[in-house]
Length: 116
Image (cartoon, rainbow, N blue to C red; front, side, top):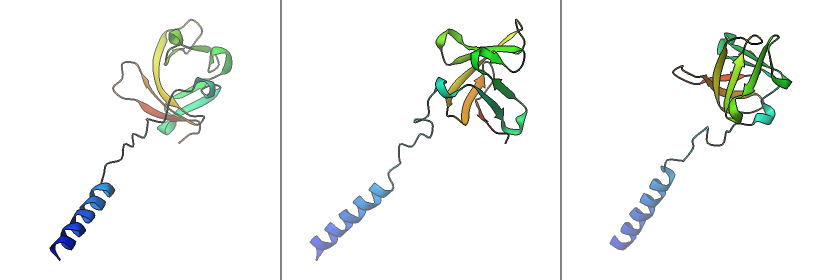
C-alpha cells in the first residue's frame, strides 16, 4: 500500500510541476523588423497624436524624407526636405503593426496602420 501511495504522489508531483512550468513565451521573440512590409504605410500611435506617413521612394508625408540610417533598424526622418532630422529605432513590424521609439525618449510605443 505504501509503495502505491509513493508512486501516486510522485506521479501527481510530476504532473503538477510539468503543468506549472513557466512557458518561454516572450511575445516579441517571434517579431522582427521586416523592411519589405514597412512602407508604404501610414502608422498611427494610440490616439493618433503621432502619425508617420511613410511612402515609397523615401518620401515622408508630403514634404519630408525618410531612410534607414546606414542600413540599420533606425529611421532617419526629416519632416521637410532638408529640415531637422529625428531618429526612430524600429524594434519590429508586421504589415499592420510596429513598435518603435524616438531616440532619446524613455520607452517604445506601438503603432498600427489604422487609427486606434
